[in-house]
Length: 420
View 1: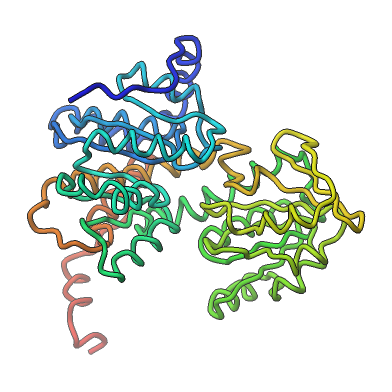
View 2 (view 1 turned 180 degrees about the vertical axis):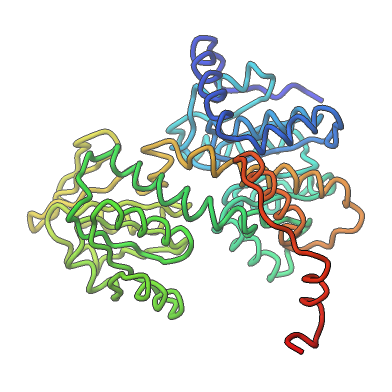
């Protein structure tokens, strides 16, 4: 197998990256436990893994764990603005090839995905399904090598279920995003905190008293709304699903169509996974000085081409803050080019929640190798026992013990004669 090149080789940069990787590891005790077992058992020995993920300190700890398990790991970026170049340089020194450069253009982005696929992966690890989509459409000759894959985020799971529904999915995928120890924590607490962090770093705004419009009230929207409310913001939710909209009302938020909310908001945060959530009609009525950010996976939730066409001028007024002066004199501020603001303007989710997400990744990859002969070609849920194992390990690492059902209680719950 030819050696896959890496983009960034810089010993001085790598030193800083290694320190930050070690710092993140302090908050990732579950991954540490798994890594120690993997080092002894080598459950991934000789397995080629290609990962398309955000190149962050937390991802580095996952990659190192997979390497400890005996895997041949290569990474590329799942978002052009989320790459941390010092982490890339550090991983190269750990002999893990990484093809990712912060701020790379679309051509380079897809070139890097193809480089990761050049390693003829047996397992894929994806965040947004760009690697899997490329493999299915342009590199289908490599699919015969693939045992299976995992998907990290909501957007990717939606795409993969669509691929499955069209009868075009060619190998089994585990939807890591849908594990309870992922979406209940990573999506809610991780996305909530990191989105607020990214917007704060980019703008240095005061949240107290601001009207914040959260577009989408899934688990990520839950977290963003909760954190904005905690900082004193007046939160308005725009949602298309009636049950989620009702839940937002019951949680104490104002709920209304985006057409109404657009006139009121000071800060807009899209987090739906859909396209053109903020469109021309909304942009036309936003107040002067409104800030617009996206925390969904792709930069399509805000109709940026329309915003560009409405503007008579554009300038970067702060790093990652573009000021659009519209023809009527209003100013709208777009953060991080409409890309994931929590990773583009900050460092993404805190390591403590990524510990559970990436523990699921590592254990699901091990599961796929062990069960390669019996897995149907479809999008699978995370096995319940893996989900519970991650929760148990996390509780143990926090020094927390919980009760267990007695034999009598188990028999009672299993009986149809309850209450008699």
